Image (cartoon, rainbow, N blue to C red):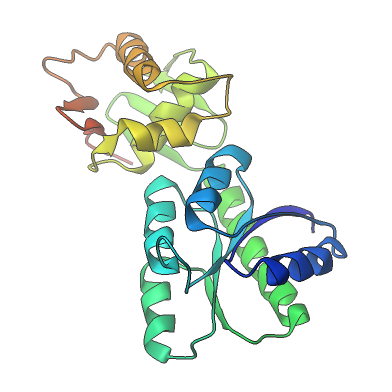
Length: 232
């Protein structure tokens, strides 16, 4: 099972040892010893799974996990030197996919990585067949197709990415930075102002009036929210 793994842990020696071990199982490994660096790599490298330590400078693993979950659903396995059950519960409640206390056997970590990746990929495969309908608008999150009253609406990769992020987070205001993180790397350089341009193009193609929106509402001072009433 090939995948890119991002390790975020302030123990550089552990990062090196764990990286060497994981590469034996055909994983591509990148690492960061600071949470801010890890979050930057998360946006740029788009790893398949993150191994995240709890006790770190700048921010702890729980804060870093919250930031990750605001950006997407990358699988996360948390590591901690503390065996406190409350930490484990807190991590799982915040959206961690698994939790492993230090010290741990590297082979056990590999087994957990493989299990989490299989479960996540099975979910993605299932989503390929998921079509979300909002009245006449149909958005197929897997195939990347969009139709209005049965008529195909051609979207660029960036336009569809923005629409899919908004649809997946319907009812939640998405600020421009979060949208920027989601589309960075899809098609060249994307800047903050580009989000407004992309949303404007989307609205035109969907026939959505920004003054009286059916689908994409401007949240002043923040960003945008998908408000379409789901029918399927």
